[in-house]
Image 1 (cartoon, protein in one colour):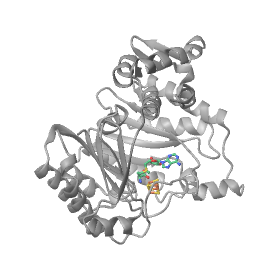
Image 2 (tube, helix red, strand yellow):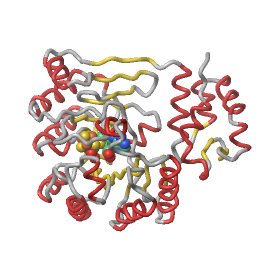
Image 3 (cartoon, rainbow, N blue to C red):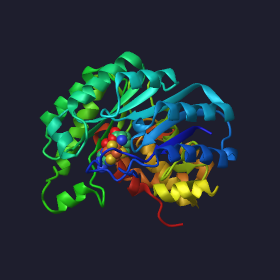
Length: 376
Ligand SMILES: C[S@@+](CC[C@H](N)C(=O)[O-])C[C@H]1O[C@@H](n2cnc3c(N)ncnc32)[C@H](O)[C@@H]1O
Ligand code: SF4
């Protein structure tokens, strides 16, 4: 079993773009810790093999007390075999943390931080209703550099009223801290968010796709120039700093998600997900019932998913792997279906691996969906 993910479903304030599962009602945090431990117990037989990564995500897991985090790591250490070089990551929001808190995190075994900076421009942070400002983010990075060898920064590009020059300033500032890893996502307007409401009412104007693309393309160019590998569409790392947790997702390995709305995958075809409601989750776990649903992916779905995640990575999609896992029908189909993309140099073969060319990178998701097998 590759990884364990904890979803901590509380945030101090709702960012206007976010539709992840969280509540700004901060009650029930103690109950949540108890429920996490009970869920681990209830699912003990699913934990097989070495645990390669533990990931505290959310929501805002930096709202957790040190005692709670330490407690969970100890439970896992006692019950399961943790890999010698295990990666233990926590997402931190700049407004939640102090030097003392980060120091204590490093002393209880956390060895990687993912800092939710999003932007170094206060006007952008305000527009997105982030609770922190740029100074707080910079302070958090300064402390982190002193305490952690391995950490990552999250930034969002394609913000309303951003342009190439403001984005260049933003990204260059991140690079000035010599970060080992960067995750950077395009702002997406998710349904039922305050951002979607504001866009609909013309209170916020989005920038057009060409401008988003120019920000992405410049990031890919600039990160490469600065010595990073673009090992996944939105992720960049210095040599030796690929995220173990996320790389395992993209390689189709098994993981267990604990907490409300957390997803799990058995490494084969079975996906499951917990209920996205804190109270219902707590009540069900307290009764000893897992509040989850599952699905078994059909062969086409699994094939399509492999294309979608694989094409986003630097290692690409392996024809041999398709042959072995899905059969000759699928590899022959793919070889035929890619022809036009090869001619137009959007895709290329690197030995056995199908990869997206640099010029077509921004179009990766569209190319992948063009290759999907929809019928049986
Ligand atoms: C859900 S957050 C959890 C971590 C932490 N609470 C934070 O805000 O950084 C994980 C990442 O998803 C990003 N994210 C969430 N919704 C997004 C959206 N609509 N568009 C782009 N990025 C988004 C966040 O900005 C953050 O970097
Ligand atoms: S982006 Fe992070 S802090 Fe903001 S609402 Fe989403 S999970 Fe919470």
